[in-house]
Image (cartoon, rainbow, N blue to C red; front, side, top):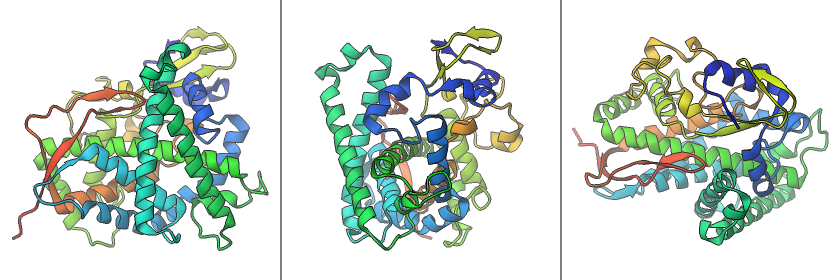
Length: 400
């Protein structure tokens, strides 16, 4: 194992010499359970699949999803009651899964919003179990990781249930002749590299990858965002003022909601959920003056890069306005990589930021969040760095 601990080394491996590396051990562990989708696939197959999925994540396409995102967020947030304690990490996991499912499967499908929410609940529960299982399988030897006491049977069961749900969605979409323009329809559309479109197995694997990357990472980031809002009422006030100064029909973006966008970028810096990612050397390669042999496993941590005082003064201080002083483009390549970088950069980075802006606007426009005095929120390290639990009391804004 070799650990990359400088922006230059990370950029060298992920961008400059990326063709000399494969995905590595973490993804080998995940592949049998979440398939050979865009997260785990390699080389030419990955390029073909990414090109096929890319139209769904163009900015014009995402603008078309915003109405669905707003409907889901408002529906979920409006069920909260004044004085109620909401376990926000669980609520965000459910909300983001429902939102992603609604976008993937199209809101016009006949099963309706209630069935969509029920499906989202099941997917969220299974995703949490599978993510934990992938982490255990990566950091522990196989004979230990497979012990029942560590939840291996639950892991296998959850992975099988997720595959069944994805298989069912693919079969239903394949039988629908109307072509609703959702992501599944895009998967079935032929491209220059694949005139027949994706097979059912390929489409299923891509659904699993997008659920894994989209729902879990985004919900964890939002949980940390709400944690910071609970601790910092002055930031809540600024976001609320920004939301109220924009017409309801305005699509949230870095341009229309600049402070809220900076707030999220600071959450992704200080509370980066993806603490451990990997690559594997395919051939002898030199990185930062070190010779790496073929088969060497490479670890890098965005969470470490984002707390480097050389690039982020007073790095443990949460300050959205630090992004006014120094933009992301002014940082050295590799210093700030919330969505990775290079040819494996997250295909859904803009999609995810739009989702989070929509959710924050829905929450902050209605509610003020209060942390519970006797509850200590602490980070828990599994596949991601997440809050142990985030119960918060919600109260409506006073009427003028």
